[in-house]
Image 1 (cartoon, one colour):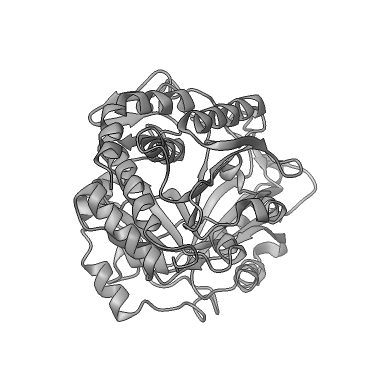
Image 2: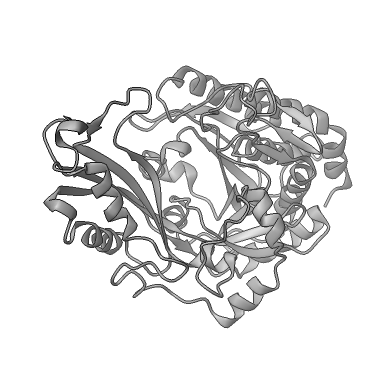
Length: 469
């Protein structure tokens, strides 16, 4: 490892923060269809930053009607492994701007406060762009070369489900082929503790719609006689209440793969402060965890399936009227785990929601999306290199963790690359508030991850091409 590389990162830290601020300043919101110009601007700025860092053949790429991807590469290390770096430049809406929930007037202005960098996209996932480019630039601006070949892709529609990403990978397979995958879009289990994620839950999403009549009817004329669609919907949803046991869905747990004794021992050795966890999540006073009795929160969120009501509507508060409502609907999100099958899980949910419905109302349950779970065996040269690099970058031994979230492309991309190992390295921490008000990035972890990536390039460079599995 060249001392000059680490020294460059330290001396150029403020410039790297400014680079991140420039990215954060662009409102690249992909969820509402109203910010396509900003997403294009964000992709172009990312491409320019790639070029300034020293990447070559930079380009804005699309697949079909996709939002723009930024791409760059450096292939000047023949015989050495090729590292595929992934990040995304689109972000979630801010919501609640100007309210007490955002502690700054402009969520798109990167703001330094209490050792953290606040702003929408500061952690999820624009910091990943800056950390990857910072590590690349540190090598190219000092040594003049990288120890490995690099291909970097920054997606523009991750926050809307990456609907074009797998098609993009297939279309550009030859351009993208690599030996190892590095994704910086997961979490460290706590600030200052680097974490490698080796399992991800999948997701099955379903829309439930209840219809009881053709039109709303005055509640004075028909209240108590006409079936209330909103009540009927909530009766159906109440069937999913698990009361700190298992979800009462027949067959739901039949395929769930239990944790091994080794995994559970590793999990139990991880730090866990219940009071701090409650504070980080904003859990209300007197509200208990909903975990199964005796089950660790980590196991519950990493390796057990779940069902969440993520949207529900029957009428509008703004246009409320004394009516018996004829329609109500909800969106359910079921997180799935090894070895559940998405199609089976949907049918299991549907069966619970359509059996013996109240008042004979019509219930329509449709699948509105699914992504499979992913899990890998975190061993081999690439993982050994990652563990060593993170310990050097953070100054402490890394943790191996699971994640309750979903990154759907990891499994298919690893398969496309012939079984390439996938290293999922944390960029967020429990205080990051990704997708929520006051999103932030811990500045110390920001620096530590950049150092770790610089070390990772060196350690992977010590391996010959094709010897990283």
